[in-house]
Length: 240
Picture 1 (cartoon, rainbow, N blue to C red):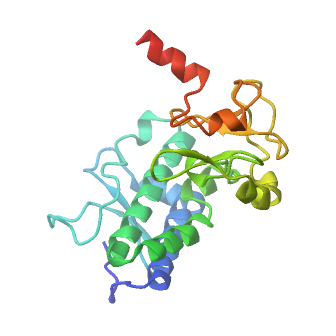
Picture 2 (cartoon, helix red, strand yellow):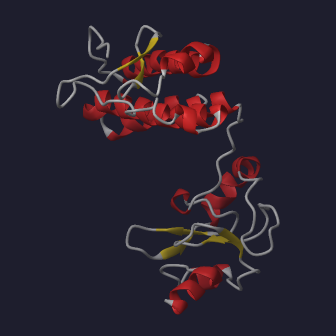
């Protein structure tokens, strides 16, 4: 595998390396498909797909050095070629390629601080994954998570001590910004879409979101709940 002449150290340098390797893998899996397919002969030994910082790709044996200078891509991608549908096989290689790209980027970024790592991931996350390019999938809008603290207007937010604290002011300020972003979120009970003018609560176990009225939880009651479990998760624990 080709090692950069100068090891990327800053967020910008690591992102540049990431985009070059990503471009190489996209070319192999979405443009030079026939050539890539032909090189992955199942009768050969374990083969790997490498993307290089000069935007070229190659299918070769893994490096013999242990441990390697950089994280290695998935080993033996050629063995599954003839046992799978061609499209499914390419999708599988794409998934492994995305994982490899992230591992290389964060290997270079091991000495970055928290904010720099966050910025690096944000830059990478703005690009479609190799899998999304190969399968022609459009990136899905991000849904609200329990950790985001965004629980709609009048909803609740968890503090470090585990207490649930009402934060209607914060929710009100972010309400207009979140309504489009979370418009695809569905209530785990009634299946209706997210609405910014209703109270929602997220399950701390399965991370599904619910209308407060559907699970009979009011904003006032949410304040006294340390860990909310939706009816479904509560029933599972009871059966165990």
